[in-house]
Image (cartoon, rainbow over all chains, first blue to last red; front, top):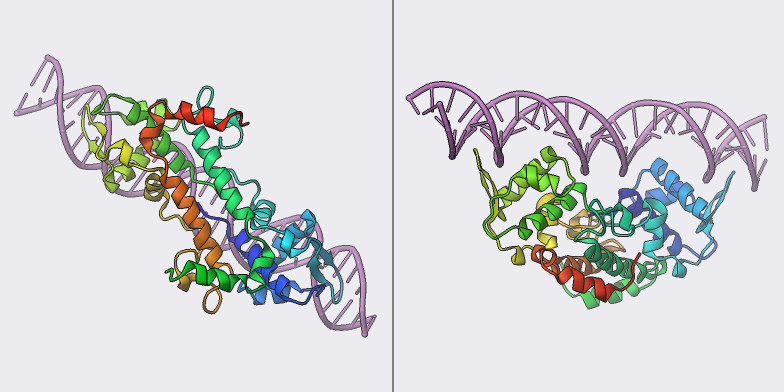
Length: 146
Length: 146
DNA sequence: TCTGAATAAGATATGAATTATCTTTATTAT
DNA sequence: ATAATAAAGATAATTCATATCTTATTCAGA
């Protein structure tokens, strides 16, 4: 019941980018250093992000990555799905035919319900939220959490 | 972003047990057959459930498993945590010290928030819900879902 | 009381996915 | 040309999920 390390890095990397002045070309080296992640792994992750179209990549000297989609429009759900694939929770949450019982299994509707709730939550945050002071507002709202 | 196969099997196995007359001693063999899961794997899963105390185990001929906690009081969250361990979503959702940045990382409060929503949803379903006709009520409420 | 069958418990092995690294190639600015 | 950068592909390491095998326990029946 966890997101992958790769998705976690991707989110942190995109947040780092969003904190830079708009249009800045970011190097993987810097993204990795500022998110405490292995540069070679981050490089792979950004290749995937570039293929998906949410960032642009530029090769060569002074190459790097820029946003292709505004960070306001990149939700956490989007990032996770690009890196990890569709959010399913269990095998039959989306596709009835994957239920391993005849017809629809007992727990099918529970999983479709919980999946909807989770996706809704993941869609309610964008990368831009963490590059502004919204984080601090949340801190106040959350109160003391361990 | 999935529950493990083991948790999925555990839930299905407990639902099967809940459908039997109260107090029935269930064999792993039957639980496995009726949930389309490998008996040897299910055996190990039920060992873990027994250690946690939610089921009793009896060895020897006519041994097997019974509920130790009423199925009404076993939530889906409980089962997942017994099998997979705590629901964390990402490394720092619960423990600030696991944040890989100095102090609290940017996304910390998002994950504590989403985690709370998810746990709430998982706690709103019990094993007993799927052994009665509540499932059908949900089907009506859900309408046509693919 | 002995023996064997049925069962769970425990230990171990397998396999797949994730995570990470390394090397080579392509591209670009200077 | 040269250096800096990402892309791409290959491979290695690690972890985790899954599955199987062996042992211990209990009960029934001779």
